[in-house]
Image 1 (tube, helix red, strand yellow):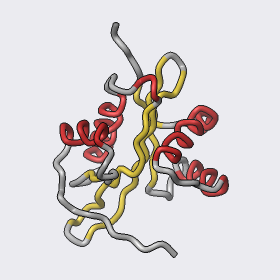
Image 2 (spheres, one colour; image 1 turned 90 degrees about the vertical axis):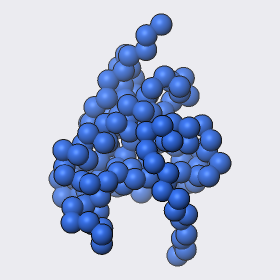
Image 3 (cartoon, rainbow, N blue to C red; image 1 turned 30 degrees about the vertical axis):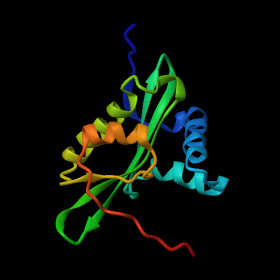
Image 4 (cartoon, rainbow, N blue to C red; image 1 turned 30 degrees about the horizontal axis):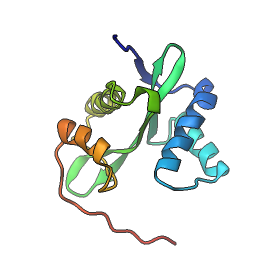
Length: 149
């Protein structure tokens, strides 16, 4: 059976279908994002002055995946680099190429924007995702540190 889906930029009308995917992503990472942050984040995707973007995967009129990315300056490169911040696919479409297609869509958009690099982070124990990531990118060896305020 061939599974087909379309990769496209998110549209404002996608909110109701995007929201359960966003909540699934947040649940996976055991984090709670306040409704106000979700609302503002969604709006940023459609603000031409914001460096944040959203791409979705759609199958038969239903959203089955999302990826969010943003551009930022880098002290080692002239052009802004692309940070792939969030990637999530609906459980029923996992293993069907949706995640790979979303990553490739970010690659295409970053290249078109003149960005020299796309990078992202994942949890060390996220073995399923890391199998895909090892296939589409190079592990950098960096470890993240942070301090919350």
